[in-house]
Every structure is written in C-alpha cells, then in structure tokens.
Image 1 (cartoon, helix red, strand yellow):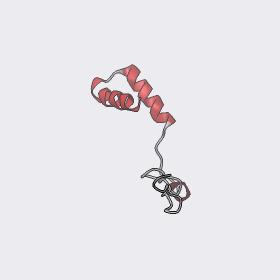
Image 2: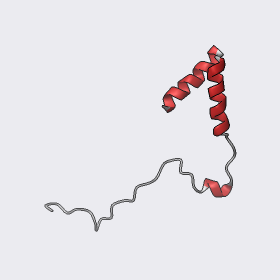
Image 3: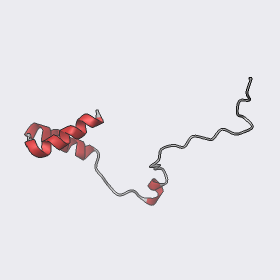
Length: 64
C-alpha cells in the first residue's frame, strides 16, 4: 500500500489531477512533518529493534 501511495504521489507531480491532489493534501495534513524533541528522539530506533543475543549458557547443546 505504501508503495502504491508513493507512486501516486510521484504521478501527481506530472498529471495535475485535482481529485488526486485533494487526497494527497488530506494525507499530508494528517501526517504533518515536524522536528522531534530530544526526549522523543530517545524513542526512535533507525536500525529497528535489536534482538537479544543468545547467551552461551542457554544455547542448545548438541544432541539435545
């Protein structure tokens, strides 16, 4: 769905369709871009959520 929206947004740059522009404007108004505060930045992980490494003591032993 995200890919479809991105393609429609790009298409709109060249087509000038009024109905499509209304949809784009509505989406932009719902998801306004703004600068994050420092305390909000602590909650953002650009690399995703890291998985906990498996402890050597808890790793499965061969034959079990």
